[in-house]
Image (cartoon, rainbow, N blue to C red; front, side, top):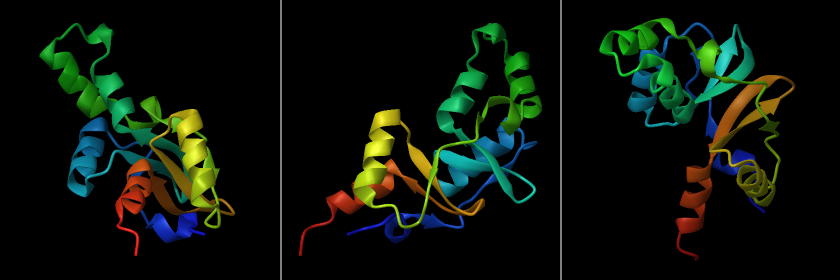
Length: 136
C-alpha cells in the first residue's frame, strides 16, 4: 500500500509570514507549485495557495486601479491571506485516505507533518501522476 512518504515532496519550498505576494508569485512560478507552507521561524503556521493570491490581487476593493494592484503585490504578506493551521497528515497515511481528505475538503494539497515539523507536501498532482503510471 502506498503511503504519503512514497509520493510527497520532501523539504518543500516555503515562505515566511512576512513574505510579500510578489515574492510568493515568483517562487510559485520558479518551483512550478500552487501551494506553499507558511512558516514563522521553523513552525508551520499556514498554507498559501495560488487561489489565495488570486483572490487578494483581484479583490473588488481595488477597482482595477493599477497602482492599488502594485500596492497589493508589495504590501500584502502571506500572513494576510493564508489559511491558518492547515489540516495535515502523517508520513504513514495511506494514499486512499489522502485522496478522500483532498476530495472531501476540496484541497489541492496537504502538509505532511511529524511532531510539529514539516516533512513534506503531497498534492492532487502527486496522486494523479501516480494514477497515470502504467501498471506493470
